[in-house]
Length: 154
Image (cartoon, helix red, strand yellow):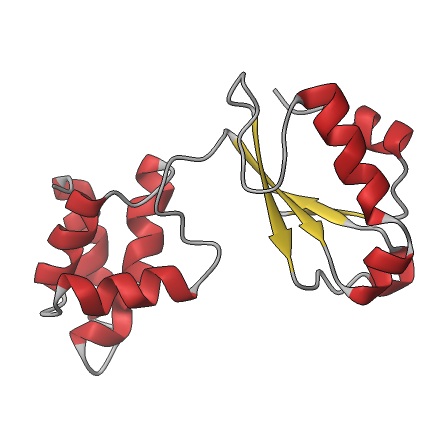
């Protein structure tokens, strides 16, 4: 199910597209902005609004890595795993996160604060290794710098 507010926002969004189904990715983002993720029930309700099958809309949802199909932490942390960040030892950051926060790629910290996901490229190769938390990019990372950054997020 989706709320009346979500339906209203999706209908408004649909008015900007030639076909309802073209609004799929943005409609899913509306639901995610309200709930933090897109459940199977929410996906079904959005698919009905857009005159799509659940399978069609799920293929859209799973294509985009920033549409979450399971619950995530309060903050989503993307660690760049491009060749530049790999060479700059992003693996030491992953090891540090595992030791200090008990989190591995694809997991959420036990306190629900962070979900750690890979990013193919964050466009910060000149500041590798890099990560993004929510919509803020951080570069030239070391374990100590990462600890200071993470301490700012509650």
